[in-house]
Length: 216
Image (cartoon, rainbow, N blue to C red; front, side, top):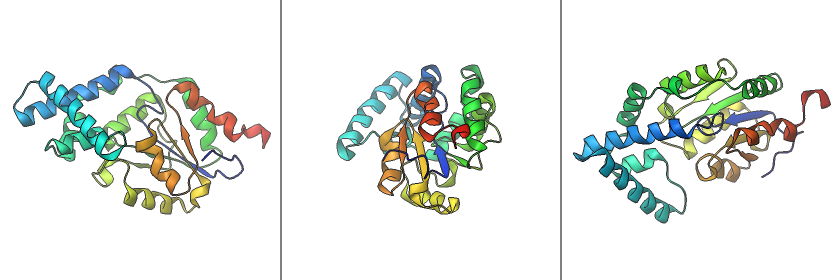
């Protein structure tokens, strides 16, 4: 469903891969997950990586959708809480991410026009650190993280709770994410407009799609 500028009254953003794009940091997340699975299974990280890849393919075939890292870990006997404890302890977003003034300006402008929310499969500890590095602290009315349910997106119950918290109709809430199956399919099924953004350039086009503040 394409956004209609005059109907959008709130925006819910995904974080990783949407508000920043960093293949290097994404690789460290995968490596940390492989290390967690390696310890769980008593195998090498390289063997764990291959096992995770095979498991991801199996899950994709079963569901017809791209599985999340949490789903892969759970299928292999992992615990989502333990996985994210590992992430919080090992990952260093400060070493890979940096502030992009274009993104800061975009979200500052949008936040002056409507409430912004964050809905991420990351944990709260890492989310706070990432947001701080990106220069986006204080711009979101509320953050929803995997800690809220210990279920990765897509999560129907948490999605319905978020929509209820906004106090808006689904047609008035725009969801922005980089993975359709994970971030956008379920909101779209609920009647929300969605926007797929896989690059910063695509993200920056939101302002033009919604209409600049001075054109209202």
